[in-house]
Length: 415
Image (cartoon, rainbow, N blue to C red):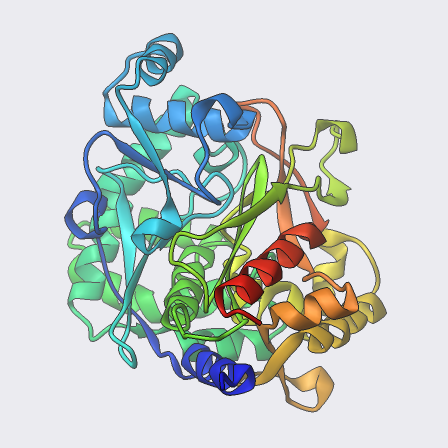
C-alpha cells in the first residue's frame, strides 16, 4: 500500500539536503538543455503569444532585439505571428527567471550544480532596478545595459567563478536569513555576502582597473544581485524532489503574467495545474496605482517553494516596509505557512523564532484541507509592455489549482 507520508519525507529530505553550488556563468545555448537560437524561454507555465500579458510580450520583443533577429518591435511581432520563433517554460529546461524570466540563446546565465543529487539549474543575470527587460521594458537604454551585462559583467563573473571551486549557495542563504533577508523580495544581506565572496575573485581575474571598478560598483549598487543565483539554487533544490512516486509535495510554483501554475512531485514532469493569476496587492511607486498592476508574473516563487521568501517572513521584519503590513504580520505569515508544509528546514533557521527551521515542503493535501494557500512576496509589473516595475506586494495562488492537482493525484494513484 502506498505511503504518502513516507514519499513526502523522501521529497522534503531531497529539498533540504540539496547542496547547490554556484559553479559558473556561461552562454545559455552552451549549457541549458534543449536551448537553441530561435527559442525564447519565459517564466511560469507554458503559454502561447496570443494569451501573453504586456510585460511578457515586451520582454520577448526586447530579447529578440537583443539577439539581433529583429530590428524593431513591428518586425519582432511579425516574426512571432509567422511562427518563426518558439517559446517554452524555463522550468522545462532546468531554468528560472524573475518576473518575465525571458532567456535567449546568447544571454549569459548562472550555472548552479546540486552536488548532493547531481542536477543542474540555470538563471539569467539580474539587471537591477528601473526600466529592465524582466518587467517588459526594451528601450535602447535597456538593450545597452543588457549588452554590457553580457559582454563585460558576464565575462568577469565567468572568469571569476572559473578561478574558484564555486560558491555554496545554501550557506549563503542560511547566513542571509540570519541577517534580515527572507530571500525573495529582500536580498540586501545576501547581495552583500555575494559581493564579499565574488569581489576577490573578480579582482584576481579582471586586469583592467576601470572594468573591475565598474563591475563591482554594479553588483554593489544592486540589492537584488544575488536573487538570480538564489532562485537557481532553489530550483536545484526543488527539482531534486520532483518525481518521487506517491508524493504530494509541490515542486514548482510559477506565473507567466496570465496564469499561475504548479507542479507536484508525484505527478508528471510537464503536468501543470493552472488558473488565472491574481493581481498582487502592495505598495506602488510614485505615480502608479493598483489599476496599473499586471497579474502576478515570475519564477521567483521558486523561493517560497523551497521554504524561504514569504515562508521566512518572520526573520525579515524590515520587508514589511516594502510589501506593506507590520512586523507582527510578518511573524504571522510564517506561522501560517507551517500549517500547510510537511517539514521544517534543517539549514534555513530564523533567530526570531528561536532558530526554528523555515516551513518547507508545501503539502497539497494540507492546502486543500485547510483552504490556506501559500503566501508569496513579489514585485509588481505594469500591465503595459515597456513600462517596467511599478511596485511590490503580496499575492497567493488560486486554491483551484491545488484542488485540481489533488484530484489528478487521486486519479493517478486510484485513491
